[in-house]
Image 1 (cartoon, rainbow, N blue to C red):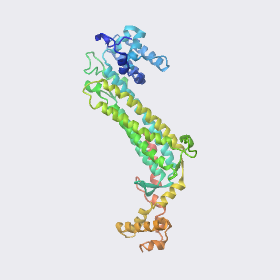
Image 2 (cartoon, rainbow, N blue to C red):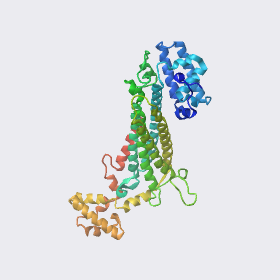
Image 3 (tube, rainbow, N blue to C red):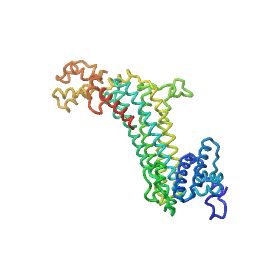
Image 4 (tube, helix red, strand yellow):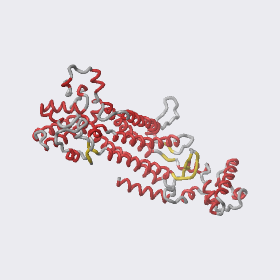
Length: 459
């Protein structure tokens, strides 16, 4: 098949060169964006009388037919045509002859592919945001069920203070909300039209770039043609957003992996989202959570690989930039399957409430509340800290939690104690006294859930 750029060459390219140079095996994914951009370009060429308006309409109708045929599986792409752009143009020319050759007037593959990728990134950022929102909705529903489910909060993976399972889940709601905001930022960064930049220095044709931008729903047009064809920051922005999202999913996965172990037993995963062992009949493995944790490294690799590709490229376009597509495609596919599967896994898991509460009680997580009780009764905090530390040591020696100690045992360390200490260190009281914005008290968590349900509707 004849190359569209082969005029100055005296011999055919080597078959290995064709294969190495070709991107059609992966960039065929951009067929819709490529045809949509080409239709807008053709319409503008006709309106500007750069090509005959009737010929522009013929090109548009034929491109629409090609789009329908591709979606119906009736089109085979050719490696010899290198990429989706050349393939579409070759099919167009095959169907309507020399008129099809006029489509490329006033544009280059350089600004064409940049436009296609921007259209694609805007679309996948929108899709990713919707999936993150579905996960947030799942977590809000789950939180609503557990505003009174006491569990230990941790620092250094050591039991620290009592909280509720809802409060813990709501921390991830905040993380995933930020991920949704990042996807909006990705869309904003991709929302500039480069078409009209040409190969690097625009064109002598009187293009109406604003009209094309309006048709393709871009907020602006690029103001520098060199940057227009060589900018891939928006791809990096998506990869960064995907990497941070995966970091959040990985942290959550790590906790679920711990929680469903025999050592914690805080949650039980549904059989539909667990796997067994080929040799150990008793095993029930959290493979979904482990795979999400593992795939995080994959998405990090997509980001770091493309950052490395871009760091040494002089202006303007270089073929290295063909490497923008596979990491973006891979990261998008990865976060999609992770978000969908993770949400279902979390939605169906069983929360073992008594085990969580016992862990909170057995880890002296109410020690700070005991110290606060002393402070409220006139003891300096540093002295209160020491007194409760001694009681914890006593409890460890005698196998007792703070609420299992007798009043006499309390008074043996400090005469300030009276019977009201036991109410102060009740786990439910400990949680609900932390009734300030951001706290774990039932009232505060329920307000946060309501606020975030409204936020989700508006975003």
